[in-house]
Every structure is written in C-alpha cells, then in structure tokens.
Amino acid sequence: MEILSGVGFSEADFDRPSKHFSGGWRMRIAIAKVLFCEPEILMLDEPTNHLDLPALIWLENYIASLDITIIVISHARDFLDAVCDKIIHFQGRKLTYWTGNFSQFTKSKGELDSIQTRAREGALKKIAHMQTFVDRFKANAKLTTMA
Image (cartoon, rainbow, N blue to C red; front, top):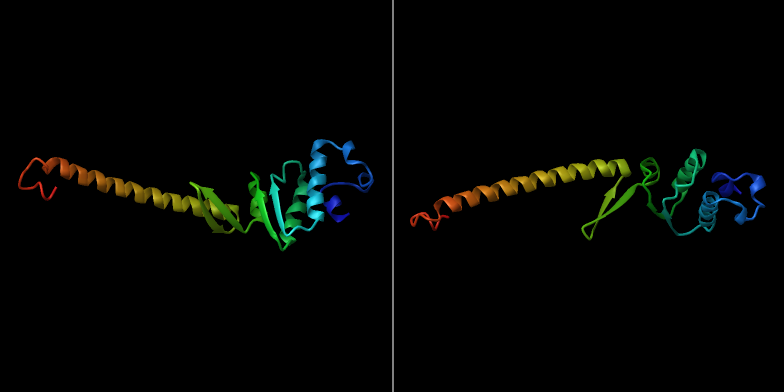
C-alpha cells in the first residue's frame, strides 16, 4: 500500500484492473511492481517520465532509503542529483567511474576536459614549432642532422 500510495494511487484505485488506467498510470504500476519485489539490483530507465511532483519526491526518498545497487538512466538532472552518489560515464568504449552526484560529475568532468584540451593544444603547438624548425633547416647540409 505504501508503494502504491507513494507513486500516486488512491485507495479507490487499489481494486481497479490495470487495463482501466492510462499508459502513464500503467507505468506507475510497473514502477510499484518493481519496487514491491525488493530486488537486489534495480534498473530504472527514465523513471520520472510519468510522475507528478509528489510521486517524484516520494520516489527520490524511497530510492535513497534502499541499500541496493541501482542503475538509473535519466535526463532529469535534479532527480539524478538526489539519488546518485556514483556515476559511470561511458565514452569512446571506455568506462570512467566518478564519485558524487550528477552536478559534481558535470563540474569535475568539465574541469578534466578543459585540462585535457589545454594539454592537447600545448602539444600541437610544440609539434608545429618543431615542424617549422625542420622545414626551415632541412635544406642546409650543416643543420640537417639537427633538423
């Protein structure tokens, strides 16, 4: 009852067949079913799509109270900030692990990206400078070995 009430159902809804609900309410039923099963690993794909604010707040608090592994795919940044304390970022066939919520991840990743961009720009400048030196002195027999 707590889970169904949490995702927005009234007591009058408890006895109604699921076929009488709209698609959005059926998604709430699916979320409630999954939570009721008490899984060891919970995978949620866009769980906030069909929830109103009270149900969303309840879900955030419920998920935060669980002591299980939860994998969440979502575009709702506030939801991710509320429920995540570890982020796994997949890019270029590589997984990178981050500690903290989504806001901390975006800040840290932005800083790392900036550092990597500056390092790459510095390396490209050094390569360009060396290429200029090689191009200038490769025709001079005395300086060919240096080039």
